[in-house]
Amino acid sequence: MARGEVDVANLYVHAPFCARRCCYCDFAVEVDRSPPTARWLAAIGRELDTIRASGQAALASAYDTVYVGGGTPSLLRPDAMRGLRATIGDSRMGGADLEWTAEANPESLSAETASEWAAAGVNRISLGVQGFDPDALAWMGRLHSREDACAAVEQARAAGISNLSVDLMFGLPDGVRHRWSDEVRRVLELDVPHISLYGLTAEAGTPLGKWVKTGRARMPTGSRYREEYLFAAEAFVAASYDHYEVSNFARPGFESRHNLACWRGAPYLGLGNGAHSYHGGRRWWNVSDWAAYAAQVEERGRAVAGEEVPIATQRRLERLWLGLRTAEGLATEGLGPAAEATLERWAAAGWAERSAYRVRLTAQGWLILDELVLELA
Ligand code: SF4
Image (tube, rainbow, N blue to C red; front, side, top):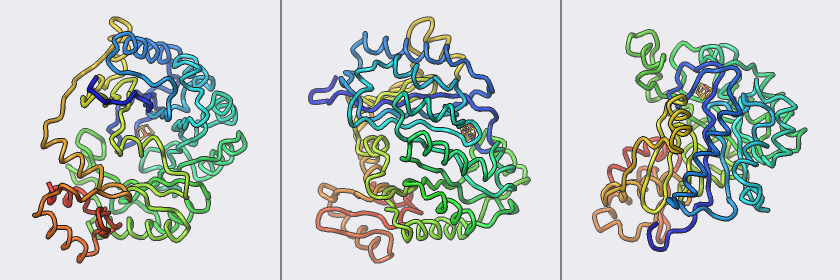
């Protein structure tokens, strides 16, 4: 462990199972409608025990944040989060201030699952809604309806979990019938304290990537992409959400603490297939295929696919990217004299706002975040 490195207090656990693969998805996902919950828990537990025994990462005595992502964690058995708590250790999951998020899809967040999760200690749910229009949902390959999304929100609240986040997707291809202003209005009607707004991308290797390559789908023009993002951002801010990160909006006090910790460069441990970890100035990641991960963990306790120690130029690029993506902005100290003219130009273009020692991007600037990071690199 590097000198001065703090203990890992942020844990990510990957639950890779989905009932069907959405047309745009390139995550580490295993299509399985009845996932093997016991085998998943055993693999996560074995991997964690092996890491503890190796001393590779010093784990905090109690976690600040735990994030169970997917995949679709709500597809696991309803008692899976109770099992996870027992696997990780009651004391590590028992901090008074623990933020424990689990992702769910509306069609599989039953009342039983919601109340089991609450009893286990889950206190934040991120719902993969993505949209409400039946044509758009069918095009994406989603299995829920608009009514399912509303019911899932109600079920979570009835179980006592009101710290909810909803994902919404913009930039769907030309010809997918839906009205963007209606989608934005509907997500606001749910009145949840956190919204994530993601622009669709056509990744190679996904069905959508192939459709775009063969001309079966056409991604939106830059101007529609831009209009939809800015329209939603403006509507959310008008409804008292803070635009605290390029893709995330929260009512005050409801920002994702787990994500904020990662964006601020805190160490985190990732368990499960495809999970990434960062600790002691080193990054490592697991094999992405679930079956290969489970087999390797069962055989030797770990399933690491690769690791790296970022070199100085990578660290600088990362510092710029992490700083500019959040509303906290980037400390300008040490950027060098050449950066001053660049930052002035950004401010004049409406892409950034300056304060004495920091620069933060505006929504207009976040639209071209990657380009701006490279300008400053
Ligand atoms: S539900 Fe999420 S993780 Fe599963 S296939 Fe769809 S986009 Fe991928």
